[in-house]
Image (tube, rainbow, N blue to C red; front, side, top):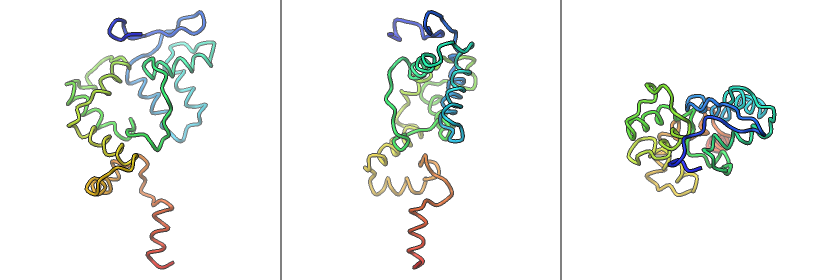
Length: 185
């Protein structure tokens, strides 16, 4: 499908039946957030996806899941990246993403009644490089590749609670081991 020549989809064909979907970006974000939730089982995540996306759950569940994932990936077969390679989180970065869309595209997401998921993703993919969110993504990407400069590493460590997607207040086993060695244990 060419997004310039066709309208964004609001229905999905499963077998010989066509199902209406809820294509608003907020709804689709809730599906993505379910997949970011470590407390949900994979079955729970797929159930959230099916119940939220389809206005009526299709008969062919396997095909419905495959087509739902294809829809959420804007019609492109996406490769799964390991969690350690992620550079943003809709859960953790929500306020920065909101600001970036507003700064870049002059769209206040709160005031928008309906915004098709694909349109949101395309706008999101074209965020100005001079906004805070783009800088966060840049630093995370460089960290993932082991390419942070000394200055960037200092910035990353100082802002770890914001920049590290896996950050918790609990020390890691590596940090506990370091502290034990520091104390001479």
